[in-house]
Each structure stands twice: as structure tokens, then as C-alpha cells.
Image 1 (cartoon, one colour):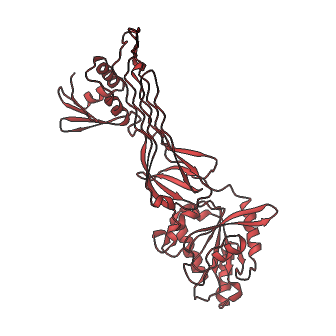
Image 2 (image 1 turned 60 degrees about the horizontal axis):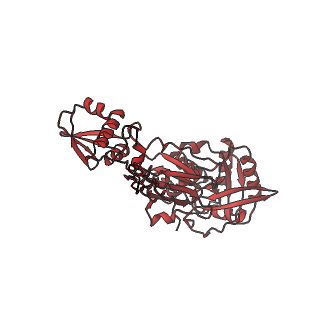
Image 3 (image 1 turned 135 degrees about the vertical axis):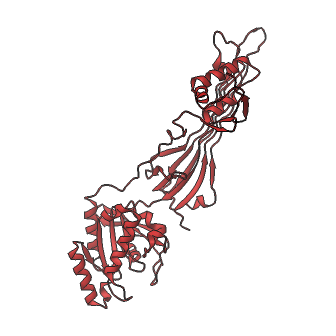
Length: 425
């Protein structure tokens, strides 16, 4: 089963917590703090697998998580880093943020890996907080949570040339005789139910990737028929071979067919209007309406559109068509690679990377965000130095100032994760 779109949830590992520990050994009166740092959480990494041709694997498994880092320990032992989760996808997979629909990455290069969810940093152990005046810190820092996001995977075939046209016009036959692909071919509409790829080898090291895009019909860009499911696979192509049935056997008007397909392409993506097209007038060996055929050729000539008269069934004119397509490709830039529209490194914190947001509900001020929740979770309320450290962090990051600007009053309730306390000036 061909699947070219999937929505999944990815979760990087949380950072391990720092350790609160003091060195206690015989004959050593004051060993001091020796709590180790927590290990960093594992990342969720994506890579290209050239052996994959579909997103079928993601139809059944929708959540992928990396391992969290281990907590630190005494004797300055740092926690173990969480292992990464590596996810393989077919070449040409575009990753979008599910909420904003912005492109995060285009996985087209098999040599590259992309981190799409970064593991949380490990928390500091109490040894980190020792100073000349604070020699026995009785607090440590919790690890930060790993990134979590819902993403949409879209497979957009990496093909130099796309075969487009109505169902049953001969696209699959052209693919089968010019490449080693073996598409299903039959004399009825919608024989092809999924895109097919093949390499057209013209000899002397000349070749290109050819894709047969399943039949597009009127209204495809609005979700009618099968074509709307596969229009995305045309986006990367550099040249389109527009296959038109000029035989007249089915009583269709080839000029109308040509215009309908181009209308659907432009409505799906305006940039396709400017994509180079070469028209393949197919089934010229069985023409039943010579006047309609001549009218089609005249109309294409008037529009300045190049037409190759072929018969895919008898292989007439197909080699010349492929050679002309190759010549056109030599003039054009490489296959399109989509630029990211969203930098996930900068998108970790929604509020200008402050690490927190504040909202008011009645007389409570709720502070949320990875940084503030990690700091709040590290507070040891029975330790005066821990409380002082917590207060300094709130002042340093501007949390106190922002609460005052929002109108907080003495004894108003402040909530940070599971931590709840009264505000005291």
C-alpha cells in the first residue's frame, strides 16, 4: 500500500536531574558537595533510507520517543546521556509542523541527518553551586524537558520529469517502455493508483528520473478523483510531459483536455504554470477524428507549445521525445529542495525565547515554560540557600518585574508547574 502522508508525535528525552550529595569518608571531616550533573536527553533524529518508497510504517506507529538522560550521582558521577531515536524516511520526505503547517526540513540528501526534537539538558548537581561563601549547597538543578512536537510527513517524489494527463492516455505505457519500471497497465481509467518512478537511460551516461503521476481529472485540485492525492509529487519536477490522447476514440476533445489539466495544475500550485511542458500527442496510430487532431496541432502551434506526435503502443516517436526532454533538462537548475520555513532551534520557546509565559486566572498567576518549570522543580524549600538561588533566577530573568507590571499584589497565588506559593514583596 502506497502511503505518502502521515502525522506523528515525536518526543526527545528529558535531561537527568542533578544530584545532591556530600563526600563523606573516614578521616575526611569536610569533604564538601560532590553531586554530579544529570545526563542530557536523547534526540529524535531523521535520516533518508533509499530503500524506503512509502510512509507506510507511520500508518501504524504514531509516537516516537528518545531515551531520557540518567540522574547524576555522588562522587561527581555524571548521569548517562539518553540514546537517540533514529527515524528513517523515504528520500524526498518533507517535514511540516502540524500546528503551523510550516516546513521544518526537506529530507532529500541521503548523506545528511536532521535533529527534529532536541533532548533536554541535564541538570547541575550541587557541586556546581559551591562557592567560597556557599560551601554546602543543599540543592541541585532538575534536567530540562526534551522537545515535543507533532509533525506531518509528506513524501514528494524526487523526479526530474513528471508524466501528467487524464487517466488512460498512455502515461504508464510511456514509463514502461522508457524505463525498467513495471507499472500496472490496463485499458480502463484509474489503472494506476499510485505514483511510479523509473530511470530513463538514453545511453552514453545520459539519464533522468521519470515519474508517472496517477490520473488527474477536472476538480482534482479541490479533492475530486485520485489526482489530488498525488499532485504534491509534481512539485519537484523540472519538466512536465503532458500526455494527450489525440485518437478521438473516447470522443474527448484534446484541446479541452489539455486546458483542464493545466488549470488543475495552476490551481494546486501557481508555480506550475511556469514549469516547462512538452506535449506528447499519443495514440496517433489509431486516430478516428483527423479534423480534431489537426485542430489540436494548430492550436498548440499558435500557442508556441512544442508537440511530439507519438504512439506509446508501437514506440513510435518516444525515443525522440525522451531525447528532447533530456536536452531541456540540461538547461534547468537541479531538482527543487524546499527551504525550511521554521527554525526549530529558535521556536523552542514561543515567547521570544524567554523560557516562560505568564497568564492570569482570577487571583492566580500561572507561569509556564520549560526553563521556569525546571528551575521551580529544583527548589528545596527547607534550604535557605536554595530559596535565595530561586529568587535570584526570577529576578535575573525578569519574572518578578513582569509580575509586577501585570499588577500582582501581596499574597496573590503564583503557580509554576506543581509548585504553588504566595507572592511576597
